[in-house]
Amino acid sequence: MISSLITGINGFVGKHLCEFLKNKGHVVSGLDIQKKSEISDITYFAADICDGDAVSNIIEKIKPDEIYHLAAISFPKEANISPRRALKINIMGTVSVIDAMRRFCPGSKFLFVGSAKEYGTIQKEIFTEEDIPSPSDFYGASKYSSELICRQYFMLYDLDVRFTRSFNHTGPGQSSNFVCSDWARQVAMAECGKGPSQISVGNLDVEIDFLDVRDVVNAYWHIMEKGQKGRIYNVCSGKTQKLCDILDFFVEKSTKNIKVIRDKNKIAAIKENKALRGDNTRLCTETGWTINYPLEKTLKDLYDYWIDKIRSGFI
Amino acid sequence: MISSLITGINGFVGKHLCEFLKNKGHVVSGLDIQKKSEISDITYFAADICDGDAVSNIIEKIKPDEIYHLAAISFPKEANISPRRALKINIMGTVSVIDAMRRFCPGSKFLFVGSAKEYGTIQKEIFTEEDIPSPSDFYGASKYSSELICRQYFMLYDLDVRFTRSFNHTGPGQSSNFVCSDWARQVAMAECGKGPSQISVGNLDVEIDFLDVRDVVNAYWHIMEKGQKGRIYNVCSGKTQKLCDILDFFVEKSTKNIKVIRDKNKIAAIKENKALRGDNTRLCTETGWTINYPLEKTLKDLYDYWIDKIRSGFI
Image (cartoon, rainbow over all chains, first blue to last red; front, side, top):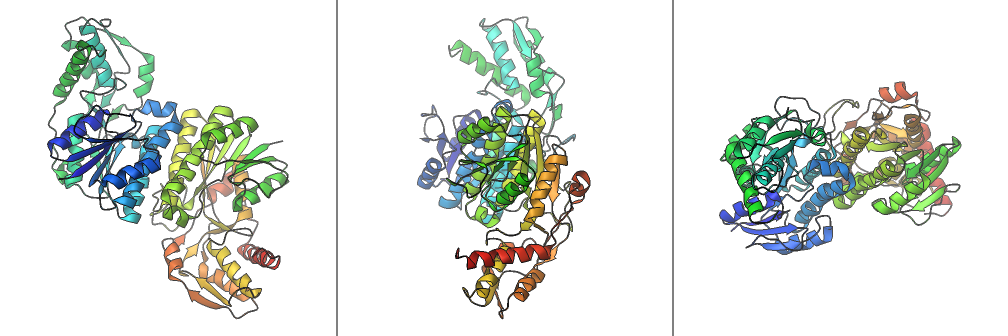
């Protein structure tokens, strides 16, 4: 049985990945900052990812066959507000984990989860893995720096490191910091009579490459199983979605008459990605990964997630 | 009077820069890890560059007009042996300083000292600032990551950050970790009867772009005085020197019959830079900087430095 360690397991992607790997028969361990995890059937370790000694002790103890390194500040706006904290967690957190793997289980596999935000200022219709990053915010810089560092571990220590540049993803469980989940939540609140019959939105003149989080974790597994070491994989749908179409979906979902309100702060937060689209050819052809969740299914499940959460009294 | 803070002031370049700035009439403060500094006429602060709070307190107190950020692990081999430590000092140390500047003196100038090692795997006759880095060791990755991060502070917070990619430099006071100083020391030891009449050398089939450290600190001052914010400057001679010619210089300097011995470990340490040469056109034309120290003068002063140090009983 394969022993997998997921860092940041309590996060949105971590929970879905854990579920996925357990279904594949993996023995899953998880590491995160919270004292406890709500996930069952795992060995859970609470540690600060930046605490090199604590992370070393955990990896020395479990010596996993593979490490999915998800722990990070993943909300770009948060990184821009507190750059020192985000850079420390995203860069030195990565170093804590991969350096411990070098010392205690150098034969293991390591998945570094990077971001489309690494591409930054590049002006292109569609991004491939050959495009050399040019980050334009602290989040993108933290992810590209970490990618460069992990690449040295691959080149100089011959560690089996695989890289993603993950584009936007959404689905049930996502924080409402992110656009689809924010909108789904607002409409669900209105539907349940817990909020006004309105939705506050940012710039709608944007097209984004979205994947369902369940397709994303499936991609991560495919990269670990069938990908190549030292290689970068775009994790994306290859298509862009107009944000206004996603808005229409949620508005139509509701039985209420939802009023759309523009919020200037939200506009500023996403205006630079006018059309962010990735090429997933490498991921599909080299690993056999395919998309299982059409966007309509994703958005429906996301909406239902918020409806359930509100009705069960969590909000 | 201009108030200048030098981080890493106790280091090889820091001492020379301090001397240079004092001669220009600047009021110099210094920050380094050692409890005390042997440099006189400065305000000295002892702090770990990675201790964000300590660094913040110092910068809040002195609010310098300009910061020359030299503090780093500067010996590439050391970074490859202890990557976690080097990445922390070089990246998070830089973040400590620039983030404190953002908070307490956002109108100041910041010089980020990068490295030719950022260019890494690029195969070219001569490197210009337009070449996109592709580091091939931890030192180069740490410097390029820090450059990318400092660039975000320039772009998102409009801080006045200037960048160097500094090529090899040498001169009196350099650690014998570095090739010219290592050779000068060995020959000086032989000359003074404190070591065998031999010199242990690595790969001689290498050409390196060397500057005198005094020309380097003059370049840093020129960049701060006459350069542009947000801009990268190669700091280099524009010419390469054959290592075998430098070896001949030292061997001929000695009155002893010096035997040359090849050391495989030293060969491995430098073999990747077969010919590392930078284009200094931007530095010369935009700032008016010129070279004052021909290599013969540099090597002679370096040799005399070791002779003095040995004769005065420091070794």
